[in-house]
Image (spheres, one colour):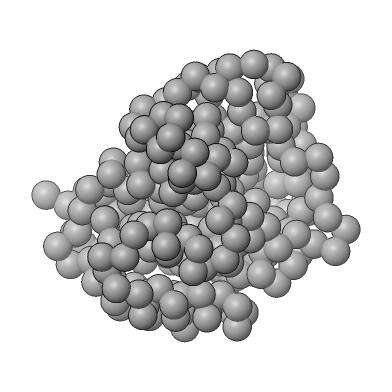
Amino acid sequence: MAATLSDRCIGCLLCHMIGDQLGAGVEGFSAARIKREIGMVRDDIKAPHMGIPELGPRIHMYTDDTNAMLALANSLVVNEGLKAKHAAQSYAQFWSTGVKRGYPDSAQANGSFANGGAMRIAPVALAFRDASDEELYEAVRMSIISSHVHPEGIDGAFVLAKAIILALRCESIDTFDTSGYLNTLQSTARTTSMQNQIKKLIKFYMDQADIDIVRALGNTFQLKAIEAVPCALWVVCTGYREPEECLVRGVNMGGDADTVAAMIGDMVGALHG
């Protein structure tokens, strides 16, 4: 039986959190280093987290990826809708709890092209699941405007939000059309750079190694939204029937492991519930 909408919304946020904390211990590791030092990450590992090594090894703790996502979800619930100023205040409130999650030092003055907008966008996708693309884009833009105004940063969040919504709408995994999924997302993207990245995904052979895909899409740390989101899309489109394996693959690709796995969790959670 297909999962209910409620199940899928809950699954989206929970799988985000699971992917985030699964990847937290190896964030910044290369795929080769993960294989050499750990073998295969299949469960949370005790290790220092990127950005806060002085705190020593931690385990079963999510990072800034989930903290920012929860802050946005909180703002949407409190206001029964999106208010950009309140969302920004909520980010600050969740940041200042005293629990260090590995946030970057600051936002960039010219607007970040990084994946920080996309990593938190799942609640907007769920709340605006029936919106037009224009309404969705504006909701995405306003929800991350306090830290991400670069067109690529916004577009990465927009494409991921659309990907989550398409997964929510899919009747079952048996009707999930990966080709149609990617084609729709390519036509949805607003920047040429994201359109070109998704075009690459469409042309890749399904049996190509994940690490080869990571390299083909850009920097192996996947800092840019136009790198991280396509990496997550690749894993989902080639492994969507096994959501747990999707998260494992996302982490073991290395790089920004927690963020890519969180994005994968957004989509497989929305698809499976």
